[in-house]
Image (cartoon, rainbow, N blue to C red):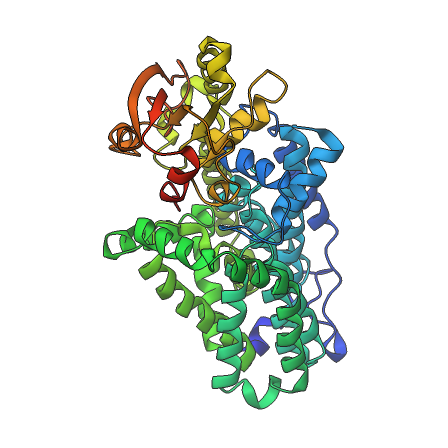
Length: 517
């Protein structure tokens, strides 16, 4: 299908296509209603269950604001700090920002359809297709980097589509700014930007879209990440070691099938036909820059499949563009036969309802165990207050003279964040942790003689008690982490240990405890 076919005016009265002179149709106001509905849905469920393990970590990062971190740049922790200042430790306050990002992504999806020549109907379809993406709803329910990253990728693709339509290369400056800001939420935006740049420079688009403004856009993209690079250079380029650890955990041939199947869940099942049609259209487009988006999708699909296959959401933001293109391509087909449109509406409603039950806290906490193997989001928002209560019981059970020279040590960042955020003001000291950036904040009391160690279920961290015995003469398991009636997660079945008699000073042991995962 050619570009001319896509931009042909629709047949229905009052639904004009692209205007004379190449100006796109006005944005359908119903799109804002769809975006508002997504925002309202996310906020309605924002206080249900509890904080996610990532959110507890990000709140900890927010209290340690710095230029970057081992596993993400600074902007998401910075927004968490804003939430702390405005709302305190509040799930609703923290999740306000990802909900706004999700609503913005819906609007971007409609705007992208508009740039492809879509009138009111395909704009609305693109908005609905974006709004019903399970990855959008699930990621925007928790305040980590994914919802912001999805918005950044979608916005970058929107600008590229606009440049391809208009030939106005001044928009490369905006694309560069979006890549730079997106990379300060998650480094993946820089990878997307680099692949796009290579696709432009090495392909036919070079003749029409590569000029000095493209160079300026690339330079603009670098500016926001300079503080990140400075921090990484002073911390042994920890992000590369972190990437290797993630690739070892989530990549490899065994996860390629997981990746391929996972891409079918990026949109609601009924909308798979839309993004497949959109990808086909981009690949066959007569506009070289639009083909660059299809090429970028293919390159990144293979790259992520091989390196981080289990992280199936890494391409989420690019599906917004594919769905927008598909909405324009399928517009005439859908409205030529009303039964097709009714089938799409029904299929979208059913598949969205099912996915919402999986990725949002819709069910009672005791009924979500079956969803954990599909999406761990709901399971990882449960059990934290009980964990903190267990740790507090162990801590207060220590004699005062031993507490004076003791630290709470968490094996993973969720445990440390739970103690530090939910246990704040309850008499618990600040916990230290070995995972990711937690380790860089140090061991607390370097001369501690008693360590209260928290560890997840041994299935997720095997041999941990034996490892503790390498550093302490006396290691006693004193409590088991549980959450009766809640969903299974990596903490349930974990243990709390009291470790005494360090074989070396705690501060000397600390360098050996670092863990990236």
